[in-house]
Amino acid sequence: MRIVATAICVFGLAGSAAAADATLITGAAIFDGVSPDLIVGQDVLVEDGMIAAIGEGLDAPEGARIIDAAGRTMIPGLIDVHWHTSYCCAAQSTVVTGDILEIAIRGALGSERTLLRGFTTVRDVGGNPFATKRMIDAGEILGPRILPSGPPIGQTGGHFDYRPYQAVPTNPADSQWYWYSVGLMAMADGVPEVTKRAREVMRMGASQLKISGGGGVSSVYDPLDVRQYTMDEVRAFVEVADTYNTYVASHIFTDEAARIAVEAGVKTIEHGFLLSRETMELMRDNGVWLSVQPLLDDEDGFHFDDPGSQRKWIEVTNGTDATYNLAKEVGVKVAFGTDILFDPALAERQGAFLAKLKRWYTPYEILKMATSTNAELLMLAGPRHPYQAGPLGVIAAGAYADLILVDGNPLADIDLVADPGANFDLIMKGGVVYKDGL
Image 1: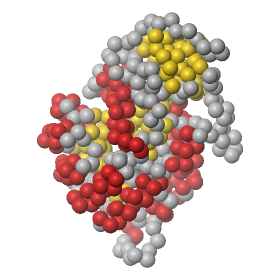
Image 2: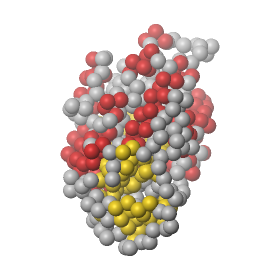
Image 3: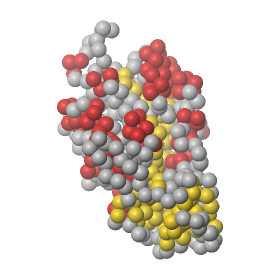
Image 4: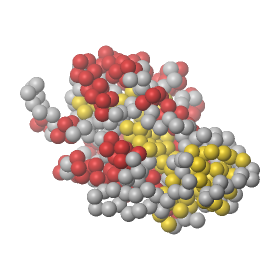
């Protein structure tokens, strides 16, 4: 394997990865992100970061790099729609003892690893990845495209209230908790404060808003059954998002909270492990997505120091099988994400989490979900979507040249995506080759 990138220097800057003015890839069997049938006998021409043409016997422009991909399968770059740039790659103790600089540095370093796992785009649903995103887009550091939600917003005593027990009662003169003041997460109570905080997050550059509408696992003050935010408050979030022509994603596990969110206009339910058929049918009928993660209490299971959080984890993951099976049966739109938190070693298993979907889906359904289907969800951001020069998640003329060459056929063996280090021979984002094992 050869990584084609300049080393990151001590000042945190990186040079561009290897690129030619044009690249012609020949001989690959192509999964276009949509069709279950591989396209054979077609070449792919990449120019100016986009797919310029797909066809038989294409001529290479003068000076183009030619890649012989015979025996390999070409797939679109993978998309994770529940990723945390700021949270994935720092130990949980960092949130207790560290500062925003450490979080940001670890997130930036982790972003390079995310790209080299073949995830060329992520929807970041909580944290402060704005500087990382800007530097990636400018070519100063390596990483995926990021659609940031910015700091996730919760209520007092809600899922994003990680303050010490002694932090309440508060008064208006109190300063914000450190992690709120630096935008790693946010708190708002009441419609006026909700409106202001949502506008502040959009001002930071969010593509969409992320809120908590129900109880969480890792938080200690909120049982799973707790509904978070009143109907008026959720509607205020949605109204602010609507004024920016984008949408709200909400952390929710249970029925009543999900029903309030759907009625208020929330467009993606994040997690949803404990939803009933009736709630999923309501989501389907209102065009609301289920952004669920293949979380199981297995070798990749999360472990919490707080016994209450560990009990909630077991309760939630006991619902994973039923959620996927019911979602398929009902026909609600399902997206793929991972939600890996505070564990750099587990973050390296991002592709393995995708392969876990074989418990419920065929390899074709899995790859389609992690490419063109996830790209469809990203379009909910409307004009706030930062990457609109062409489609993501597909191999088609005019699309972004985010491409992976797999040594083998993942439509026959989805476990190939679980080990990108061994099986991804080439990773390209925007026409630039970041990994070249050919």
